[in-house]
Image 1 (spheres, helix red, strand yellow):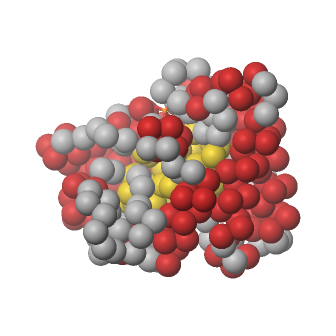
Image 2 (cartoon, protein in one colour):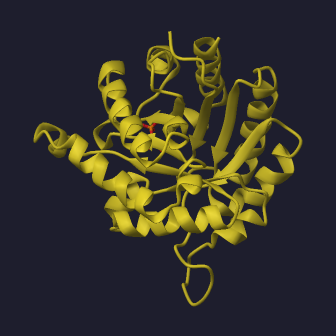
Length: 257
Ligand code: 13P
């Protein structure tokens, strides 16, 4: 049984969605989530063009919405980028930063990710800071070194109070979109390491929500969420189907009770 900390389940739609399909998905998630108790928070991080739609359909529901990235800059000549303040204009709660797809395809460094986390906080958003190792790094025995470096850059950029307001998501790169989740024990081991690193920053930081991401499905959510240091999940593929996403939210509820 996990410790009695509230759970959080956030969907990362990545580059999926169309306005018509979103309407059904968002409405179904809003209805399904209303049956959950307050002990489970639910969020969806959508592509920016759908922020207004998300705001319109989710306002007044228990579901919060977010973005999948923010610029490290406040404003200016940065074609194609979206400022955290702009996302805030649409009532956004969460901003994913440092997703492994951005670290890999856009060469985002730990320092850039840290700057984005700070920018999100300054705009009143909650950054969901993603960390995680590749298969090669895991096999070389450097998981803790990689995750530690990614996390330290963010903690260095934030005050203790700011650090206490973030969410961290451990997403092993080899488990993302592969259908092959980390085992509950593998995930718990890294979460315990992350928790200890956060505790070094301050007692209040040790309690930030730690999400696991990487092939979370209704079938494996219970076991993952039952681990001592796993406070919920960051869900990719399964967040695109309301039935699966809500089943994962129900698994979180079962583990918090
Ligand atoms: P999948 O759930 O599709 O493996 O994606 C995980 C993820 O990257 C969430 O941010």
